[in-house]
Image (cartoon, rainbow, N blue to C red; front, side, top):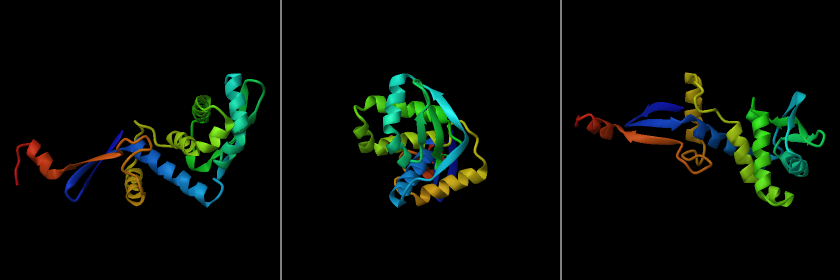
Length: 181
């Protein structure tokens, strides 16, 4: 769940999911600003069964979702077929992503609201495309995440407003153990 690192005078604890979620979100925003978001085609479309109302909302929002690299179409009255997903999400839980988007669309009142809420949709996609809590990262992955955090604006907090890391000064840690300099 956490990366433990040390810099010059501090111990740093990083929430790997929250930090990666912020980085993926910032990459989404940068890709959107630069042009269409690259997508990754599925060899076999992923068919997801949902309530008909969710399918209706997803079908109506499809043109907006395509701008974000998510290509889906209606597949009968109670299903959608996902043909492409945003490339920067890599191997993502397509079922979870689409169900989460359907939940978000149900909270909003119209398809026009979808365009107005692109940031919220990007945030939902970033969450699904991020390193999961509990996943063991290799040392190289941890280092890459930390280096990318250093270079990414707003990396100190996740997209939900929580901190992505806490920093404990070594002098404070030494004081906890009764050591003084």
